[in-house]
Amino acid sequence: DAGVTQSPTHLIKTRGQQVTLRCSPKSGHDTVSWYQQALGQGPQFIFQYYEEEERQRGNFPDRFSGHQFPNYSSELNVNALLLGDSALYLCASSPAGTGELFFGEGSRLTVL
Amino acid sequence: GENVEQHPSTLSVQEGDSAVIKCTYSDSASNYFPWYKQELGKRPQLIIDIRSNVGEKKDQRIAVTLNKTAKHFSLHITETQPEDSAVYFCAAVPGSARQLTFGSGTQLTVLP
Image 1 (cartoon, one colour):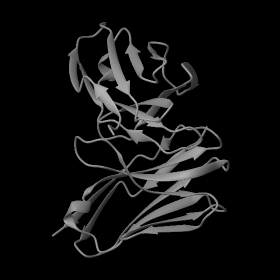
Image 2 (spheres, helix red, strand yellow; image 1 turned 180 degrees about the horizontal axis):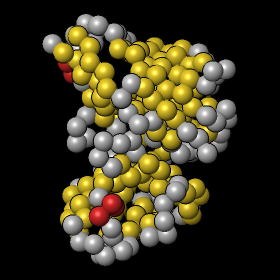
Image 3 (cartoon, one colour; image 1 turned 30 degrees about the vertical axis):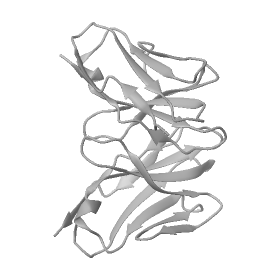
């Protein structure tokens, strides 16, 4: 049983560009959450998807958007990249009715 | 929203000694408190969790205590080993939400 998988693992972009990160949840999990972890800090909640809709959102600008597909996989899109968007982006999935999150290995984004 | 504070930010102990990390939370509706261990360059991994209907939970060398009245919870690691060295994050989940609010992390170093 594969856990949470994310792609790509590393990527480099320049300011102003756009990026799409992808996540496949653990089998049987229907909820996907995205977190941003800057170097030396704890993960910060971006948003959560359930039943293909954004259910909750953290304190992130509209440049951050997402999508969930019928197979529960998800994408995170960031437009107009800023240097401060450089971070590890973590996807986490959870089964219905619990708060237990299982994290993927993350996508490390560097913005130059 | 929920706010989680974590102390200390760094902790060094001798191998075999105990380590204690403390967290406080602000939202009295929070009912799930996981602890994650994150090794350098890796994803956060759940090591133990506790729900608001119990006061203490143990798993071998790791234990977590919860004081709902004071709104704080602690991680206890006994007989520490060098492989326990990592960053530890506490988190809280308010109410029925499935988003985690993380503490700022504790860098634990176990000296051989």
